[in-house]
Image (tube, rainbow, N blue to C red; front, side, top):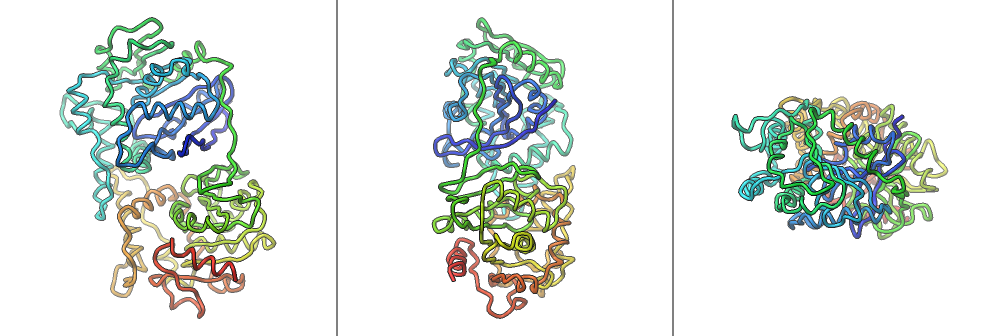
Length: 545
């Protein structure tokens, strides 16, 4: 029987490493390929967790793991391997069985060569053994920069690049000789696109590391039980003939089908995984600088940012706007964390948090209260942004003895928008075979920032005081919007039934930026600058009154 898959962070030096884990028994570490994340391995984690303790990290800079170094640096393969050893140390893993796919397989092989005492056995699925000239061509062409462009044109390129990856190898070589067929549907391409957007331009780092590595020189140095595995239909199966002579204990295996790989892995693991090797997993407790966490609650796992001793003092709860995520408030949270303990969750179905059964302000409030209760948080103040004002009002209604002061910034309510039906509407964000849903998300956010109605761009709806968002900000919010698309429309419809009178009755303090719609707010509202970082001073002044 499969067990639940949970998520957590481990601290490796100054970095946070995100991983998924499930099951009990001998430990197996799964290393994903670039530019993916451990999310790609969810079916394999579920399959193996009936017999093994499975740990699947996001490699540095991918998924939710911090990169090794700033994006303008070029970490090599040994820095990635050192990061894996650091994770093993953090989890108390001595010498687990390691499985890697493609770039993950190459990382696993280098790990086994450099640290044979830290790898019980290795199964490397799809390694690339080619000439220096071929590696150089891939190094120069396989990983062009991925930088957001105000026009959104980078999203068209992104969809095409990931679609081509399943039809050609290399993806940029559109020739008969380069044709392959990798079974994938439109949803699978979308998931790959989402992982690549999470990585951003850092997606290139993992490719650079393995393409700048002569793996053929290391294969004869393997001293741990190893299986070099590849599916016959895998584009990399053509490189098996280039393998150097294999040392004792190393075997090559060609699977007839991709679907055979989990079974082959499980059989190999039964022979080689050490039952005494397991990871020590523990939830970290917020008490320090701003970091990311997961917390299991009765309604699912919630992801949150936190700083300071949130269970020992009167923390400040930051609620992000609907359709975004807590990272949209990260700079504000960091600015406030020097003065108050701060907790900023991804609301249910947003960011990295599990979606609940329903998406309403009351349901979101219930989930947040479950999170706070599980963290032993007592009384707290609230800063709510945009449409999360409705969630904040429900929090106060559900827990009046716990909620102190409530500040609503740019509250999206029935009487602060020109047309509630328009404000609750969304573009079609269903996965489109052409990738058009990515552009719909981009232009929705672009137009919403510049006009009070994203569907009606007229002189009357123009926001003359609006600061056009930077392309990198739009890109961050596109990722958040696409992650929250399911249920978002229902939440907005419910949130837009609340009115300013509800805020006033709750004693909420109202604040707005110049480009919001200040004429709809009652006299005495507080003016906010466009930059959220500068909100911190105003928020603290209100809280200290």
